[in-house]
Length: 429
Ligand code: UD1
Image 1 (cartoon, helix red, strand yellow):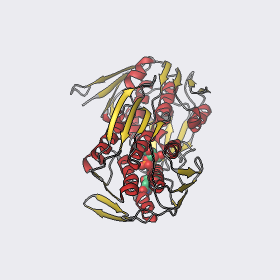
Image 2 (cartoon, helix red, strand yellow):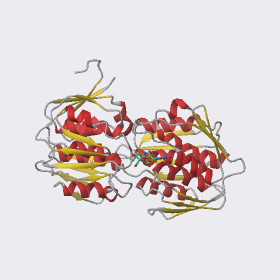
Image 3 (cartoon, helix red, strand yellow):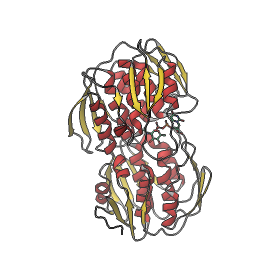
Image 4 (spheres, helix red, strand yellow):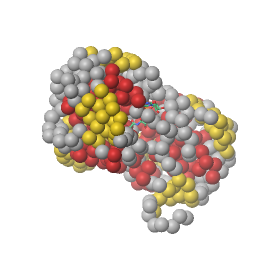
């Protein structure tokens, strides 16, 4: 199985192009199911999860054409046409590898009156239920049944708009409901909606397809259902989590890195935190320069829904804080069980103790390379950052997690001076 081998201690310097956002692209791919006309997506990243989602909609009968690189950052252009849907079941084999597969439920239910979706798997971070998705569909009049590991939702006479107040902010449930409500009869009001930039991208796409959604950027979205949607030509927003990860990499190596093809506005919480830790962050129009001289200062942080500090950056921040001057208290409020990177960072010399939902990170002078592995995507990227900032060689195992979310990781890092390679022999060290 592939591993990434890093020889740490190299100062990163140069430019890293940021890819399109995985988490924005996944719901846009699902949105093609809402119309029989072509939906063209630009700036798609070349990632395992994008391929899985494309394969999933193809299994349902979608025709996917194109896929060539059309952007300077490596972004691809793909056209999806759901004119001949032959299947409304999302099978276990595909869904188990990626939780976002549940996003086909809303569009299938809205357009065909039924969907059957295997209960999802994905990253091993907590129990990650889908109750909010299912309750939202019920509020629009759908019947929900669970059988044999599948959820079956049906609304033979169509969905009917309603008020849906989420008890908890959920990105995926907001997206699923937006897509279902777009083709429902009458008005749906979504309260306590997620405000992540990826939601904004989906609203933009749906409105380009003829939907009537307002309130974007606030926690209340209003959807006036329409009878049918049409095609569109959309662009996936930049990946703020990929960008944030490289910001941490620049800081831990005391480097000077410019990120291109980014949206600095979507990274404000990360930028503010890095600045308070002593990192220089300069915002350009579509660029971010991150420079650091010396060790960062320990800062406390709590993950929050957008516009707060993202849970998807928590593990990477912890790697940076492991070498801080002083201590950092990092509190995870979104997912339970999202500290699986801690024992691995400790094996590299970090001083971290977990107290419930908080981790106390006491910064150390040096981290030392080690063979490590992680069981989810962002935990894996935190080990990459720690490896870049450590002395000696770090090998990060289970690279398939990284391939789900980081396009050409070793190529991008090598281009700015990191010593990173992918190895695929069976030797462990
Ligand atoms: C999305 C992101 C993921 C990110 C997360 C939070 C995608 C593909 N993934 O995941 O990278 O970490 O947002 O920013 O966009 N919950 C329930 N019931 C539900 C749904 C969620 O209790 O039906 C809980 C979750 O367990 C979690 C919280 O709500 O505690 C937020 O999860 P949610 O925003 O739904 O995450 P995802 O959309 O799965």
